[in-house]
Figure 1 (cartoon, rainbow, N blue to C red):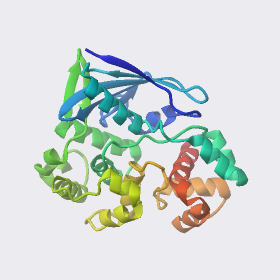
Figure 2: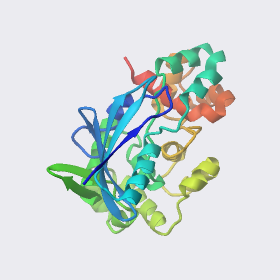
Figure 3: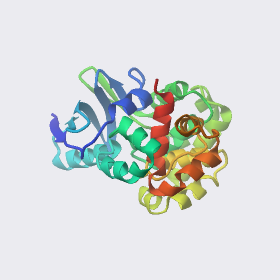
Figure 4: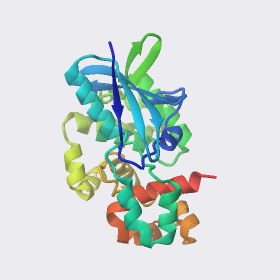
Length: 297
């Protein structure tokens, strides 16, 4: 039983470079991306729903094929809505191009990566746990550790012989112990922070997605009150779930080096914040594109 849906994002639209950098082909984070197919299961109303996404075309005529392994109309609609959010198909990149046109270097940057945007996490909890793991280590190593966490505590479904994974719920992680999480490859301090975050999520003490999007600065302040979560982690987590992409981790090393590469400015956080202060509502997406510029050859 499956349902096929075609999504048509507003052009220009690109997502493949993001999937190639931030997803692994052989380790669930919980998504896997291989041979142009993004696979992931999603918990929707307590039901584990396997999904497959194929990017059929991008740029000026984007088209996305979504396979939902369910024929329940309500589940299918909610799953498609969730995937649409995660694939950021609602973001209007053309407005970004118009706004930064007066800055030659920013305009050149946005033209180079025309249509590109990050995926969003479906929950703040997932975004926050991933951001904690990503603290001060190589991205590929972090993705491997996230994969270990998903395999150990997440959900798994099969369609034929194909596995589909969903991220662990706060309850599953809160019931564990820091020593057990440490065995997955992370530091003990990160493990303790993740357990604390899971406990807050279980108690309903993390900001909701609505609260994050209404007042991201307040959400950042709330997150940094948790031991083990600094400004970089909080800003990165909020950036992963923010609808307008106006928030980003200004202290991120790749962001700072991306700015330096673009403008020849000192690679420091103050320079990033000052340079992007004029484009506050676009700062998150611009920081993201600076990262992509820095890591591109």
